[in-house]
Each structure stands twice: as structure tokens, then as C-alpha cells.
Image (cartoon, rainbow, N blue to C red):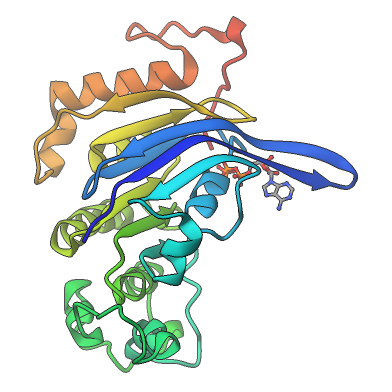
Length: 272
Ligand SMILES: Nc1ncnc2c1ncn2[C@@H]1O[C@H](COP(=O)(O)OP(=O)(O)OP(=O)(O)O)[C@@H](O)[C@H]1O
């Protein structure tokens, strides 16, 4: 069952060579169960840090995070969180099917968590039929990311975290993968939170776009996307899309619809 996500005043500071680095400063967001959120912000503002705290890869220095009613550490132990990284991180000596089945092998039969789909069903979901026995090196970058999405879904996570999963792909493949991801999300009954550097991608994919301020980041604005679902590429030429992209851009750069930049406020020139 998809779970809602609540992040309240989450901060993270690191000690780096004797100096304290504030990576995230009292970030708050909430995402309803089954929703699709996107996080966007300038490089280094703490997007990955926020996602890694939700996944319990790192602990917050202050503040609270709840996945449903549970702390991330409990949710992780229950395998309720799926994570897709920017690079596919597949085991090169294992086939596509074996890579997807890996979490099942690790969790074992004792787990309460029942896989909703078999690895072969997931292979079909991510359109990799015919490649079940291929090794990662025999696949394109887009295909490798399909494998890592299927692997993240094998234990039917309540929440799926995606850290720039298609950042390394070319524009055309990326757009195709985004459509695929929306279809997979709709069929998988999971809450999704995506980190992206692309304003268009954030608006196209999400119900809510969480705009972060420059480092040390916090969520400075939430932009709701009033586009219906299922999303289609034609919607990217609609006025609603254009207006929503402008609102996100204003949130990021302080640029109004006429394109006047509030550079005096120190807004970053680019989002990388
Ligand atoms: N383990 C760590 N030790 C020290 N500093 C860290 C650590 N992890 C992240 N940081 C710092 O925290 C800040 C936020 O990093 P983070 O990777 O979350 O940003 P980001 O918004 O995801 O960046 P990008 O868009 O470039 O991927 C950066 O200044 C980074 O150098």
C-alpha cells in the first residue's frame, strides 16, 4: 500500500575536515499516499541528502521524517522503501532476471513482505522481455535503468525514491523513460519522489514540485501541477504546462513571466 511522506524541519550537517557543512536547513514537505512529488533546486542545495535521509541511508541531524506512521529506519527494515540511483548500480556478473530478483534473495522467505510481482512480471512491466538472461554490459543505459527500477519494485515498496534516474541519458531516451516511469508508477501503487534538475521534467511528472533554495537548502516553495493524468507529451505545449513551468522558474530564480531576473537577490544563474 502506498504511504504518505512527512518531512518536518529536517536538517543535516556534516563535519568536513574540521568544518561544519550545513547541507540541509529545516526542510519540510508532505506528499500524500500514492502521490508523485518532484524536488528541484540548484546544485548542492541538499536534494540527494534529503532523499537519502528519507531512505535511511543517512540520519537527519535534527527534525523528523515519517513514512506513513513510521520512522525511515523502521520503513527500511520492512523493505517499504525502493531507491533508484543516478547510475544503475547493477551487479555486472548477474543477468537481468538475477539482478531484479536480488532483493528477494537477500530478504529471504522469512520476510513478511510479499512480492506483488515476480521478476518476470516486472521484466514485462519495464518492457525488457527477451533480455531476461542478458548481462548489464549488453544493455543500453536506458535499459540498465529499467532493470534498476524493476529491482526497486520487486518488494512492492510503499514509497519509491528516484535520484535523477535518467540524468545520464540523452534527451529523447529520457523523455521516453519518463513516460514509462509514469506508467510504471500508475501500475505499481506506490508514492514516488523524484529528484531532478529539469523544470520541464518536474512539472511533467509530478503532482507537486518542491522548489529548494540554494545551499543550505530548504523547501522554499511548493508548486502544484494542475495537469490531468495520464500525462501526455502534447500537454507539454499547453498553457497550463507553460504557466506551471513559469511558476517553478520564478521560485528558483526569482524570474517573473516576463523574464526579469531578480539577480540582486543572488539567485543562481543555472540549475545544474
Ligand atoms: N558525506 C558528506 N560529507 C560532507 N559534506 C557532504 C556530504 N554529503 C553531502 N555533502 C554536502 O552537502 C551539500 C548538499 O549535497 P547534496 O548532494 O545533497 O546536494 P544536491 O542538491 O543533491 O546536489 P547536486 O544537484 O549537485 O547533485 C553539498 O554542499 C555537499 O558537498
